[in-house]
Amino acid sequence: MGLRGKDVLGLEDMTVEEIELILQTAESMREIMTRMIKKVPTLRGKSIVNLFYEPSTRTRSSFELASKYMSADSVNIATSTSSVQKGESLLDTARTLQAMGIDLVVIRHQSSGVPHFLARHLDASVINAGDGMHEHPTQALLDMFTIKQHKGDLRGLRVAIIGDILHSRVARSNIWGLTKMGAQVAVAGPATLLPPEMADLGVACYDRVEDAVAGADVVNVLRLQLERQRKGLFPTTREYAHYWGVNRRVLSLAKPDHILLHPGPMNRGVEISTDVADGNGSVIEEQVTNGVAVRMALLYLLLGGKSDEAVN
Ligand code: CP
Image 1 (tube, rainbow, N blue to C red):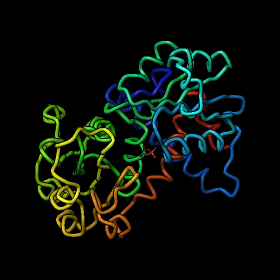
Image 2 (cartoon, protein in one colour):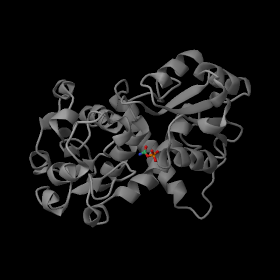
Image 3 (cartoon, rainbow, N blue to C red):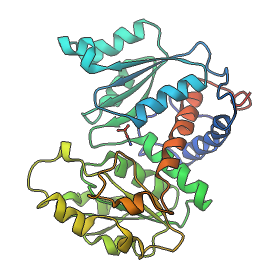
């Protein structure tokens, strides 16, 4: 069994079996990352382009490392220094890259739906590395992988997602994925950052962070996305930190063995306090490590690797 399509665009359309396959494949990839020589020949001869229209540290560098660990050739395109600056369209940019013989495009774009548009127009595979406020499927997959490593099974877990839900593609992908996998999701944030459609997605919505965190196995704190916000959604970052920031007092309401996630980059002292970000329950650095393994798994599954070849 493999993935159904040539692309990975979001978790809304992914089946439980596909999610399980990706998480299981990522376990083999995680093992490769512990070796002295972190390199397998599995994707030799394959070419991957990372096309990022928005800034990224974790996602872009982990896709690049994932490509290298699997012996694929990868190219990073920063739109600030590409012909996008001369007015070249997205589609012309992608077709130009395809004409050079690439097999897969990893795209991040500020507009929702851009990866889906590219997937319709290119023969190459497309992976969504974050599209506007829509989805960030590879982040949600690495979050689920990290949770599974600590908790064993996602079914029945109580997961609290806290903060700027409105602008968060991470929240949407996590909600699609976690609810499919049988977790109970609660979200909390200021009323202005809680979109009304959340209730239709099968999640419990709260405007007090304490109510969402109470009894949680997992607390996932979102970055306050100031770059996507118009003015007036909350009074000040100081008040945001006071009412919706996750700190030691708030986490004392979660289960004693809770784990704490954040997709990064963090606004320390705003949505998360430094003591808990660096504290015992924090798995934030593990998320980063697991991001490479999950992205290796996705490249492998999309570019036609066979299950018994991955680790040799
Ligand atoms: N979590 C995440 O997408 O981080 P980057 O913006 O650094 O890729």
